[in-house]
Image 1 (cartoon, rainbow, N blue to C red):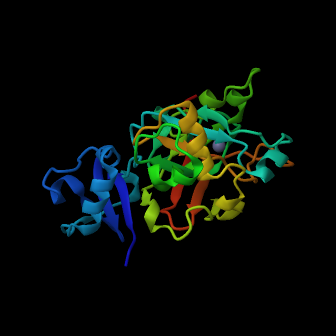
Image 2 (image 1 turned 60 degrees about the horizontal axis):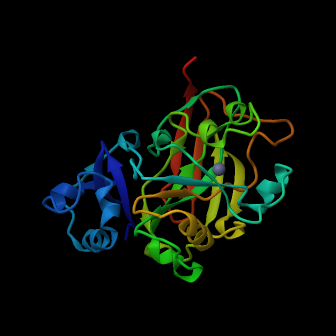
Image 3 (image 1 turned 30 degrees about the vertical axis):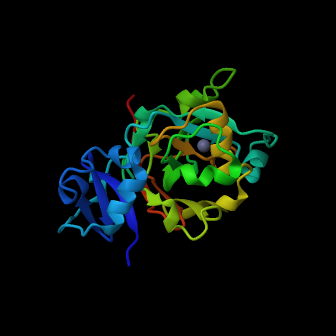
Length: 283
Ligand code: ZN
């Protein structure tokens, strides 16, 4: 049976089963949707409905019509240096507590959106993205997965020129240009065999440049959720970009950056992949 995925088609909440999208507002007679954010505001009741309700006819759709599955999160947290091999390749120590910044939500884009290159030094970062499904304050690590609705694949596209132009660096700004946060449809957490150990890869025009497993994170998803919830109140629909494994372009010898026309395919086991083409940015 095809897995259930939750997405955004033309700005409307959809269930995606196989290659067809099913409009939630139509199928639920207005109980949920059409705003994609409504799925996360009442996640448990929505998910129970989504699993049980018979879908209507649905429609096949080109991926380009898909928007970000979570278009207006209250907060987008992102974690730096959360894989040991990425910290090592960057010549930096592994942090002793999660290194947190934000991606401004205006950068969020759909799973097949174009990535406008804002400079000649734009880099790729394949990342697992956590979608919060319940309000959470000071949640202990063993209970942290219970506040997670699901996961999606994300790209933390980064303009290294802007990011490192000054000291201290501009993490949030350099990672929030238009199109710099493509995210895919959401897979419910319960549908993953082992949500703490998933293969993650990034390919550029078919060449594999990143390959790891999410079990290699320095701070696991439950540890990140618990840590963040001790310092900020997590709300349904909030996103956490959980960091990227080794293999980014800016610390390679020679350095490598994204080029116009290049296709970035970002994949995580059990989740719907992203396929984003690089285009020329505004001059
Ligand atoms: Zn990142």
